[in-house]
Length: 153
Image: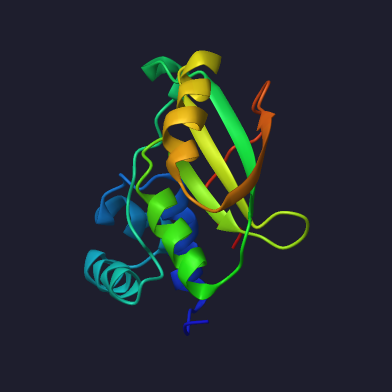
């Protein structure tokens, strides 16, 4: 862990809630002037603590109403095959998250698509084109109860 003090942690909490705040607005919340807040945020960015700033988009409002979690098992487990799978899966636009996991499966994918027909086409034409997939088990999201990208601080 990087050497983060209480002010750094507070800055991270504030930015996770609203990354569009100005440095001046943030400075008021941590009782510092603009310059040290600016420098601290730049240091957090430079050190990779803050990876990037994004806008969270409502998937349904842009026509992507189906979220699927797909557990993948590979047929073989070699370094080359694993690296090839990772390269292939990261190129698929509809895969929004991919985790290498332990247990009965090798990878967990989060896939966001328009509807069931779109998912069927994705499985057949995109996921199906990746070699060495032994099995794929899909779980369909019926409702989102909690969805956050914040890291607990």
